[in-house]
Image (tube, rainbow, N blue to C red):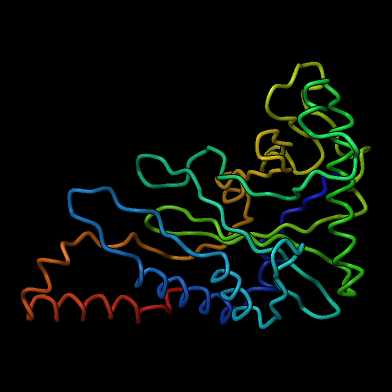
Length: 276
């Protein structure tokens, strides 16, 4: 059994009601409205959503408390029930703007490698890979157990907003089995190979749905997802979206009628948030 268990749509529905998804859709459209237009001969920019804003999307949508502060293990809390860390990752898409088979961007599960008395660089230099795994396992476990104790909750989740194509983005979630965060579960994936930059791991997540590694340069335990496989197997909720407009705003504002028409169309798209 892996530490991170993906929640199927039926389980996601217990968190994300129809109204919750409309809240997310509203905030998505709000964010799209504020994205800067680009010149028509330039490539469209990916949607940018500050993490602090994304946390508030989920606070509002799930009717929970915001507890995120710096490096605290969770961002949102349902008192006496569960807590979750909210993350956003980018997805790979193919030439037809559909989800591709590649990995998502990466996110950190734990960082600040301290307490072992030996630096991470030194452990990599000496090829002490098991000691590296031991150290990071302990850091991650303490991080999860701390929040369970301090917030008096039984369950911890990772909620992901997956920035997808120009047509849609996605939400998924993983439950964290803290009892499995140990070195019996977490092992080195390529234990016979010399490692220069990263120690890849077994036991964190099903290899079909993602991978994890201890990254030397950034000094953190990282996770990447495989959105296409998660989508195909029914673990993603779809959020309709669109890319920012391509427009020469400088030219547009010089013609009041055209600018007014453009703004009416833009406002109409913004108000059309009940697509789910």
